[in-house]
Length: 381
Image 1 (cartoon, rainbow, N blue to C red):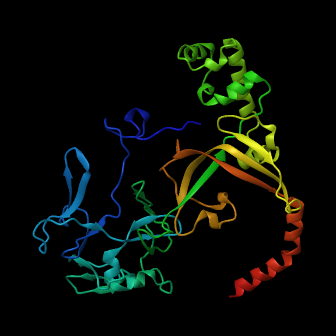
Image 2: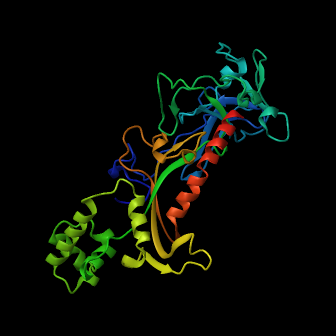
Image 3: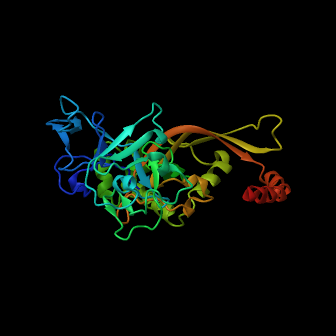
């Protein structure tokens, strides 16, 4: 595993063609609204909306309405607050043209988006057509009693700039850009748990594993020693160090656990049996008086390092609402199988409480019938 910092360079294969490091972005939503004349249109060369840039100052980039007849100078325009999504995780521009005309239409007149209230709620927002006079409230797009007011999903993924030519078949739902259920991360985290060291050299290798993980021969070790990165290994020969590295590598790959939480559980339930290190330290403390029956042990962790990787995301429904994370079907972060995923590491501390498992099992068994009755009751409401 390797953690790399953005921005990526072209040599890394992350950018298609650019000598300047950076991250690719895409404008979304593509529909904007002029705050002066209320014009609602997509960004293209026919709408009058255009991007204004200042050389050397990307922070000043902004979209303007070039030919607004209500403002003295071209005003800045704002992206619309409404988009469309589906339970499959797709995201698309709201179908403004079809929505205001209530069906596909050949009308090519301009559209306007007006807010007639002070609250900003959908019931006060109306979209209208200058040509045929059609007018419709945005509240209908959020009415659960209506069948697919936003139409069928096209299977669009704007972050990947693609869409399914056959669509996904689900009903699209109107949603606010800043809604809390627009984006739920699906992540996986793991603590750094060092392997028990059998001797002093193994312990030193474990502590410096981030530096030694890629070492394959004595030549690489000699380079690290000349660079001053092996100051703690001065009493050991290069051959001994290399052998210890190989033993550490074989131990890490011999029987990998399918569940990342298993090694963590074993480490904390063993208490202080594991060695201390710069990123891992455990301390067994006494169980508070009065809780000896309920709590089996209490472990303090003055030093911990956690790595969290973003695997994907969901929309509308959170993966945390599901029983298992593998039941979630997150939206992919890439068009194909990802070569890497964004990850971050944090260092901190924590407390581990080991409850009496048999006591909890008995408590759950006693209330099993009650839980079943409650489930039946809720399903009938």
